Image (tube, rainbow, N blue to C red; front, side, top):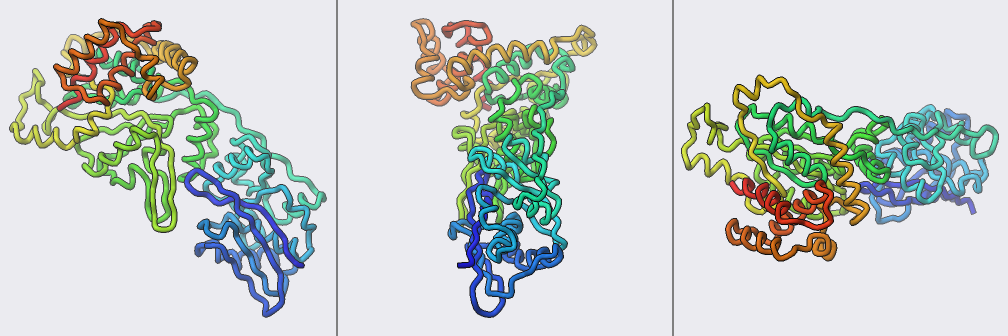
Amino acid sequence: MAIAVAQSRAVLGIDAPRVTVEVHLGGGLPSLSVVGLPNTAVREARDRVRSALANSGFDFPSRRITVSLAPADLPKDGARFDLAIALGILAASRQIPRQALTGHTFAAELGLSGELRPVNAILPVALQCARSADPLIVAESNGAEASLAGGAVYPAAHLLDVCRHLTGEARLSPAQRSTRVATPIGRDLVEVIGQRRPRRTLEIAAAGGHSLLLKGPPGSGKSLLAETLPGLLPPMADDEAMESAAIHSLVDGNDDPTRLTRRPFRSPHHSASPTALTGGGNRPRPGEISLAHHGVLFLDELPEFPRQALETLREPLETGEIRIARANRRMRFPARFQLIAAMNPCPCGFLGDQTHECRCTPAQIQRYQQRISGPLLDRIDMAVEVPRLPPDELTDQSPGECSKTVARRVAAARDRQMRRDSCPAARLAGQRLRRQCRLDGDGRRVMEDATRRFGLSARGWHRTLRVARTIADLDDRDAIQASHLLEAIGYRQPIKP
């Protein structure tokens, strides 16, 4: 029975399910058919594989060839199955030993000459192969990216090189895993003049992973403050770096090892559509919120974003993921991002400014502020006013603290949270939230009074407690004190327009 089996992997979101490539040579008129929900690119593998085998010196069997991609109900796209199909045909026709394919995974496109070409989204495939201890054979151009996963990766330039490797004639050299290289991140906090309260709020946001809204007139430094946040955040853990890199691999590849040390910082323009923010399309791809996974999503000019686009952020802010449903598939993209937003107080930007007169009518101000819905605002942990600096502060030459100094305090507080709860304070929930944010009598009275005076919702209550927990961690205190609660409540008040 002329049947051979090779292994490859599809890409479904950031998952890479195994695909078994079965090749059968049967009687009948010579033909090659591919079954198992292939898209156009997969069906066109027939011509690429035929030419690649002929130009590499192999015989293309003059028989009826059936290629099955299992599981049959999993959509297959792209040219990543070319190499597995070609090797399956060679094994089924006994031009290479069938057992040579056992235990390997193949993911590469074939050129007409037999050269191996790179495919997109190779890192999710490499991560799955590393977890299952399967050697992965890829094109040379994919070698550096695939090696980031840490498994056994063998880059090859040509189909003949792969065949020689499988038969033992000439072994391929395994790719060396790229090292994580420390690189400077973002702007330095020393560039920020004055703004003591916003700087303090930024430190708390970095320590606990909290979302933050910056409100102030044009030119007050809101964007600069946001751009300093990546430099305050702790480096990504290995699993975080791999997950983030896998998402970027789906979009633009990721053969730059320095990305593994940099938390993403995404700043989409306010004309971005809901699909651009959350992902989707005919062939679903990750959006900005997923590209900011384990990093920062900065939305400048928040009220200028389309209302529908902003509303799509509500669920990911709570769950840390986005699920995209299509008629024939469902995909999940992680989206555990830290939201930093900035806005003016009114359309002209000068409401409450001491040096410029606001020209907006009350109706215009109300319409502008109502572009951001209450449910979205309720999901933001902190807000702070960023006022225009007076001339004496602008000319002050004494520098403030640099990012490195603040980052050390942030790292100490985050380390305390991770050792205690295995997550930043912003993600405390359920029993852990009640246990770590237990209040004494004074604390309960403070929170009850704040709830009555400011109308805190249950979500607002919990988010205030998480911020207070972070402030206590920065203060190196085990218990939340009334002073921590009062400071956290103060950051909650500017949220409501």
